[in-house]
Length: 331
Ligand code: FES
Ligand code: ZN
Image (cartoon, rainbow, N blue to C red; front, side, top):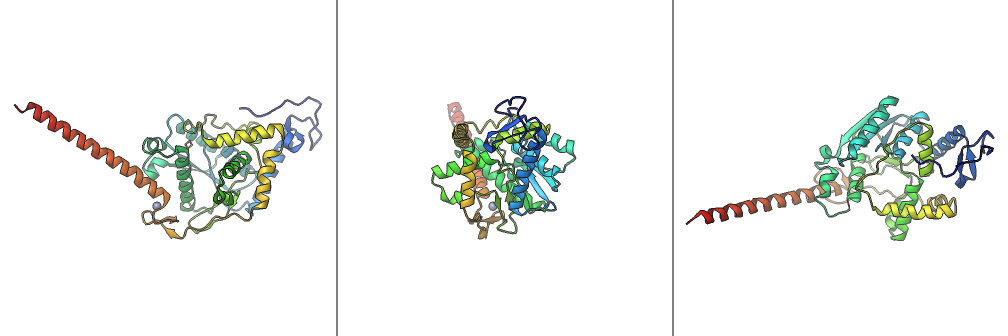
């Protein structure tokens, strides 16, 4: 796992304790020893939790994929004394989902933490792999929609009011850049590390790692002996979100602190997040919705219609084939 950008000379002093520093953080104009780095990391998380107004007694449901961010998040919240339960949604992506589930199970077992497991196929009727061959839509955005909606619903169904996820500073800054370049003002208003619950059947959503960069999270995982899934989702290759993050990495390498300033100046400027309450309920599944049929039921109907038309084409094809065989045999 790649964790550090540079090796410090042995005489470098830790910015906090003046012991030997091993971890350079140019963005913060600081170098830390392992202990002080962990202190820095927990301070960033506790600042986020203070901003959200979340106290350690609030039960938190942690969305865990098996990647470094979600495991680091679960670990840091647990070690800071928060009451946490993990939730993993198995997506059914060949050669990827099995490994994710194994990693999450091992992590929870080693720390004796409660874990809820659900499968997309069971809950929705189709796995991501099955959806992919039935839709023309970009699979990453369909996957994002289903994960979001399923996690919202499962949070409430399991009696939690707060769902936390491992989105980090790079994710949020990349999303901000993408929305600005495409002039998606509606999404810009929603870009906040804390979205309060807008409806009794929708949880509050929080991103406690939003102050931490991807490489800082990798370093945390190394120091805490966390072994995340290294494989990337094979379906997300070429996703535009990666390109926006790469663009910011390029700027960050030339001007350390750019990413942080870019995101934080937006968050400081923006008013409280707008997370509007759905005004109706879906007339298929009864969940809060902005339209008569919610986006999940809408997608499910499209997929079923596709299956039905394929089945009827097959029926017609075999009927025609039978007729042709019969007429060939007729003298
Ligand atoms: Fe959803 Fe890859 S994790 S498409
Ligand atoms: Zn619905």
